[in-house]
Length: 223
Image 1 (cartoon, rainbow, N blue to C red):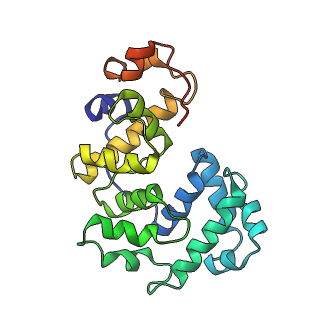
Image 2 (cartoon, rainbow, N blue to C red; image 1 turned 30 degrees about the vertical axis):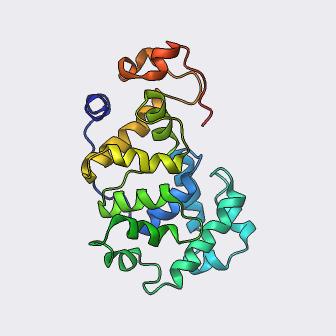
């Protein structure tokens, strides 16, 4: 899949796109949300003030600020709790301080540091570690999960289990993992969509279990 998707979507060098705390909060906002709405929600969230002001704000004000993100009423308290936990950690809001001492430890320890934060799951933790720290992890969002399951790389399972299953199949090469993640995400957004996937335009269809079973009538994804 890596080799097939590269000509379609391009080579993707692994360069941090934003600072770690921005990445962490934006990834929480991104769940079940388009990239444009995620960015709009983050921008409005920051209009509430600095991180201390966001923690101190009424949860309703935070939810209103991030209303472009889906499920703002559940994300708002999670974001405030995550920021509060970081504020009270030795490095404060500096994720570099928090994670630098884990750079040479097993990835599972670095993942635990992040997933111990309130509201941070395996996908968010993996994405921050790969995107910002070039650690050999593989974030599985809804698009990656859908494409890899339909193709048959993994059997049907939950997203959390899919992180572990896919990582076992992939080389521990951060650049490879990053490019595959980004290109699978693009493919899920543009071709292998939730409803009415565009199988006729799919470069993976010759190796896709779902297409072999259903032809161009692959049913809607039920997660």
